[in-house]
Image 1: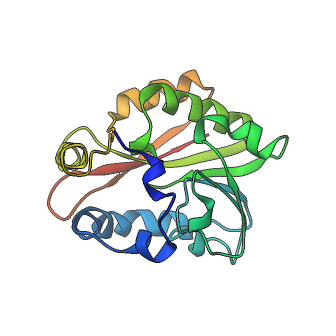
Image 2: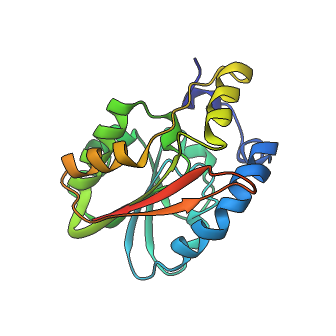
Length: 197
């Protein structure tokens, strides 16, 4: 199975090329996701798995944003982007602390152990009152079609998660307050944004 390495030789322009799943899933999901992101001001943010920074650019004018990505060459925004792994943030940012750890459309590449480590690492790099904001494909609605198509057509292993599983992982990582915002496709449930402190 292929993962992040498929982007190593891609340019930002190639990565940004919109495919049908973008229009079926992300475009309608953005109705709830973009307002949540745009409400963030005057924060120090760690954007994990930012790709080209399509959501990051909504933040950089009013926030201090640092990125972490397996393929940092994809982001051409005027911010620092470290090459690194979501499951090992402390080795990338050291003792630096953030108000928010943000990750949009990255976790579908993470298996359950990697999600657990990502939550633990996020907690470790957050300030005491910091929060995590992360998108996940759901296990019902349109998401199973998405993960199956990725596997069969592109040979990319993708994961989807139940809110109950994410809640348990977050609580085990030290997060106490957990909120979910549904991010639906045009016709079916598709994903969710979890915000946890």
